[in-house]
Image (cartoon, rainbow over all chains, first blue to last red; front, top):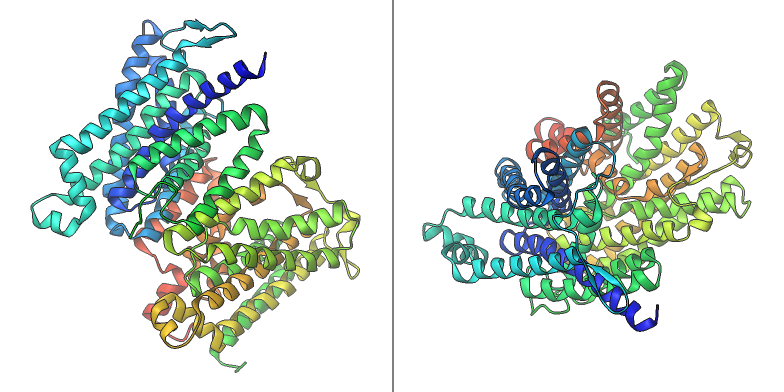
Length: 293
Length: 313
């Protein structure tokens, strides 16, 4: 294959990575932005989404598309409920104190990972895609499902944006983000908002996982990479800025696709992690973020 | 150092460990040697986190610096164990200085993430240079190379005694450090950085020095681990090994000299005991973290100190 089509393939792969990453990272960004909580267990919520999608594909009879549709609705709801429970039982009692919540979410990470290992097992398991057709380009064929993932991610992100900007729930969330004491004084139930935001963040990770699992397989250790990449994206985009997160996801996803195709993936990850550390050190507001407090 | 009840307490701990050398059954004997090595690591972590308030999530990088410099020097360079041990200590301290110069420009959450990222980069680097490190599979250090001053570290008795000697030095140095004027300044940084600055201390240099000492401890522990247990692998520099000392310190009591050892001892046996019942030992780690941070954020010795033993260092 010539260089041009090869690059196109790399970019398309990168676009799929970027789409899933944008969903996952926007969950992390939302939680950090509104609750000021760094959720280290975010990758495990992603993993739970994928694992639950596998269970759904086993239990729901009929064509794969039906099971997939059920998973798409059910998995984020279950994962969101687990997250809300964790928020109410643990994070709330820590008064969202940054260091304590990080330690607690590390604990949560281990607990969720162990639960997946015990109930789901150590093997990687495939989930059938809801449909299989190939789009034939002049140089190579490309999975239509992968393009559908990109489309679905864009739709979901638009939905998140609409919820935040144009609904009452979004208004309440933004009010809580800006000043939680004043929000409370205006009769907003801040505890419920936090539980909801934590659930929504986890749900976004889960839905991203349901979308990607027909391409990637479900495995109990699969949460590590999305967590790391989401951190990278959220930090480069500026902590808590949703728009920055989306731009950074596009940048990281595309460059990851290109670098992994042409160079060693491990090298790409080393460069990305170091870049993040340096961004935090020298430009803590992120590359796209405006000045933070 | 004054011979007071605090010093006596720590000497008693060391005496008990010496007694265990003769009394403990073989299984526990080798466990305790390992716990002492890990406790040195946890003590180093405690100097940064417990005393100076630097919550690092990347200490595995410092442990790994000691582990790999000692391991690779012996395995590929043919160096003696004593040289490797010294190199490991210096590598830990040097790595801590390098990381600190950058990471200490940030604070709080950003500091945690930066250290996490550096450690992750270190872990990936180990994998990337798989030709030398053999990645996850790791390298096994031949028994012949694990001799220090005629003591064969691969056999049980000398290993225990060398581990105890190094542990004793580390523990007493830790005690001396936290009772020194500099130790007070470290605590002042943790409690109120702005006020310490007003009193004329430079937060950056104090924290950098504390981190460097912490790195020396982590490097020593890593080098000991490589030489005493003869295995150097990427798993030992993964995120889990950054969380482990945090867990030990939280359990034993952050900001107490004996806390890291107590935490390492209890956690080691808790996991050992849980592994016999179920293979879900990660669950124990996770639940311990959550329960500690929820119900006993001061840890065992921290709670004892707050309630009854005010003199505990």
